[in-house]
Length: 112
Length: 113
Image 1: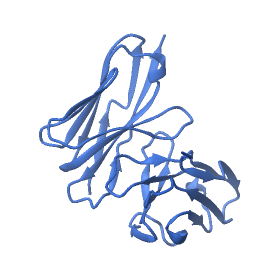
Image 2: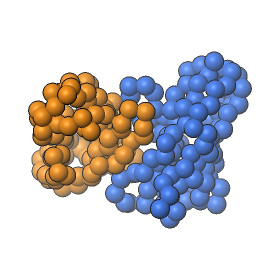
Image 3: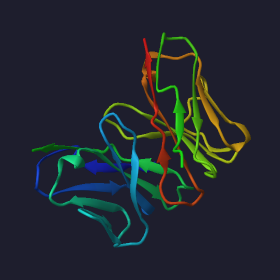
C-alpha cells in the first residue's frame, strides 16, 4: 500500500537558522498537505499543494511539490521558538479515493 | 466559527471495559474522519464518513471498534472491550468534500490500564 516517509525524524535547530524537512511517497500523489502539531496539541492544516513543481510560501515557510508528484519539502528560514512542534506531510494517492496517508512527522526543537 | 469538538478530553479505563468518544464536526462539513495517533507517530485513519455513509472503514478493527454518524452530523466511536494496546489519542477531523485540508479536534487521550 501507499507509504509516506519523512526525514529527518528529529531536527534540532538554533534560533535564527534555516532547515528543511523532506517527505517522500511510494506512489504518485494527487495532492500533498502539510500540518503542524504543537506539543500536546492537535494537527493544524498549513497548506495543500496540487500541481507538479508547485512552490508556495507562507511568511518564513516555503513548501515545494516535486515534479514527479512523489515528494515534497518544507523549508523554514530564520527559525523562531514559535516554530517548535511536529510537522507532518500527508499525501493523497492519485487513485486513493480521497484517502490521506500521513507521514511519521519531523519533530522540531529550537534552541534559543 | 466553532472548531471540531470532541469529548471527553481524557479517559482512563480498565481493560475489557467499553468506552465511547463523541465528535461534533464543523457545521457544513460533510466528510468526517476518525484517526488514531500513537506517541511519536502520524495520525492513522480508522474510518471516513461522507454524510451518513462510511466510505472507508478498511482500517477499523471491527471485532472491537464500531462507529456511527447520526444524521450525517455528530459521530461516535466505540471500543468494546478495550485492550491495553488501544491506549492512544483518538482524533476526529472534518472537511468539505474535495476541500482544502482537514480541521482536527483536540482529541481524546485514552489510557487503558
